Image (cartoon, rainbow, N blue to C red; front, side, top):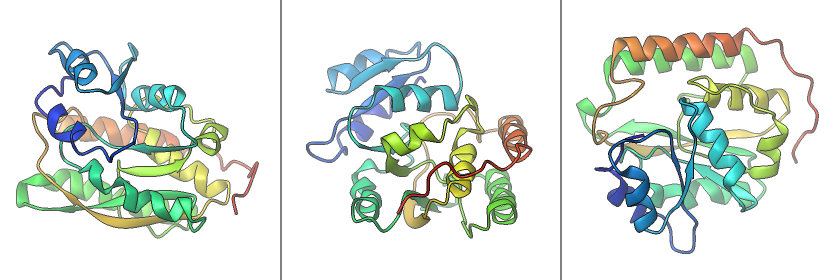
Length: 217
């Protein structure tokens, strides 16, 4: 949503022969038109929310494997092949990019503290020893659809990890550089936005554990 300044940097780093699906979540700055002019497949999602946008992109994707990446130039999509390879090789079912800030201002302290607490809660809830609920991630499309993710706000990435753990998925993370985003953040740029995100994620933690429908191996 309203990422016109970041789109050229992001889209020019999409790996060759990969298909970029850009979800327009109500932009008013010409982001959708710019993305289309740069060769991306643009999907409109009128329902506001991070999860709503991710779900729309997942439905629109056609490839057997899908990758998620923020469109604010904080993460380099050129690194996605390194995350995808363990899934392609059958060594992991869900790969996450553990953010490593490149500068002091890339990741505000309040957001880091909230993320650290989330990692602790994830470990207690699922047993996964993750360090970051990273927005850069890779998994197989059909398997993700089978998780039946329902959160349409900030709890979507957490619900993905929790339900993947309940289903017996092998979840791994690797380090990726994290740059200062282009433009203001809609979620973690303010204390209020961070609080709303934490609230949504608490709702996910309150869900009862799901019985595994299928264990990927």
